[in-house]
Length: 252
Length: 252
DNA sequence: TATTATCTCATTGTCTGACAATGTCAAACA
DNA sequence: TGTTTGACATTGTCAGACAATGAGATAATA
Image (cartoon, rainbow over all chains, first blue to last red; front, top):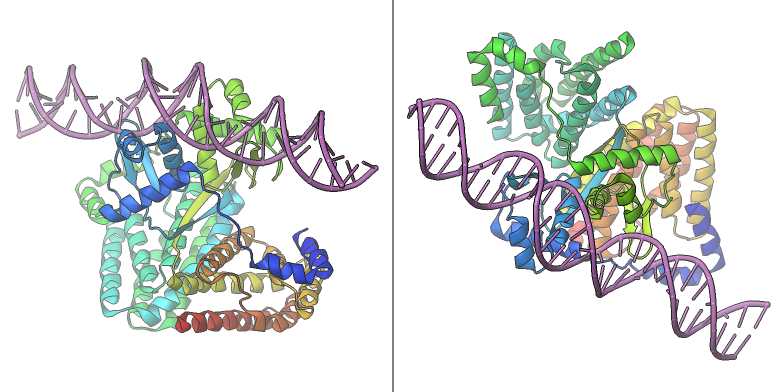
């Protein structure tokens, strides 16, 4: 539909189209957008960090000279985007970094078995690339962090403890070492969604347990800067998880 | 911090930990979550499509027996996630598909020059993989769609018209043919963000114009099911864009 | 008749004030 | 010292009012 419109339009009046193209959409400014802007300014000025508490609704309303409901609606939209969490009786706390030039990308997924494989498919691609980049770009400090996190992971694993938190931290270190924070962000979100979908029908589980021993090898190649081998091992790890997921889906 | 907590906890009382692990987080149910659920149910039952209008706030409030402000806050969080758009005087319209088992993943990006390269980096990985999958899995119908979209794109391009909409549709067809809708979704979002960041300081522009002729080759390989060559061409296309972006960033 | 200006009305946006529900923290207590 | 209790602060919900705006109907005009 869009393409057709564009076509007929441009073939008819190409000169006019050039004028049109120069126009930029006018931003609609409602009251609570200004509230949001003021909040961002305040958060930046006060240097609030993730986990810090925001002023109460009444304080904000009084200070900004708007009704509390307006404040509430502005905060609600932030809540919808996952930027803040609010607790009755407690307060509102910052849950994500904000800055005057942040953009929020909402993605919707269906919560169903198929999505497990799909999120895993996308996550795999990102994680493989992040691993490759990490093996190339990791700084000395980052290499040490990866090694340290590996030891914690193996420690938990060999003791039979719950190694998932350590696993997340280990991979987080690798993704961070990729030099592009977007990889880490998106992978984390996909990972969370993956777990949400998984936990819902099946309860918690330790997916990919069989792949943990491979992590030692993965860390080794990343740290010594061998991207090809690192990617090979990472692919193996991801494949193990994929096979387990498929097996579980087939059981049902 | 998390890891340490887990560690000390589990080394101390591993048996207890097993009990803990069996617990599932209790869902907090606030009023407006129930409103959301009711809305989803209503939308599914009524078969509302994207672009359709929702009932008015007053109707919803009366029907669900809650205050209008509660409805408004629930809708506001949906608005924050991009599921609906609202217009004073007009009404509320559905802007994205909803279903009872959707999950919404918000990702935040910083709107700055560096982000251009970062979003492009992530998008490249996804787009390359989507191309590879499309070359392998595309159905006959999807191949025809890709060919058709290519013709529209080349038509616009050779006439000197604005080919960007056609370009988006062409790549959309490829991403859809990958068989994993998540690729298309994420690529589209990243693409939008990329444009937002780009347009903000520089006004509109046709990035990657030099890569358009390559698209004919890309379509050919995808349609004839040659993943390796398709990926090679796709990489070339993406590299052209990347070089242009870098050149623009250096100018400033 | 066709086009433009105006008006009305429905709908969302904002404000105020009130009460409910709940987490936090300090004081009282064992 | 550790536990329980209760006051208080904070978010959640409700109701009612008016403002601002967009859309469609109606009237005026060429």
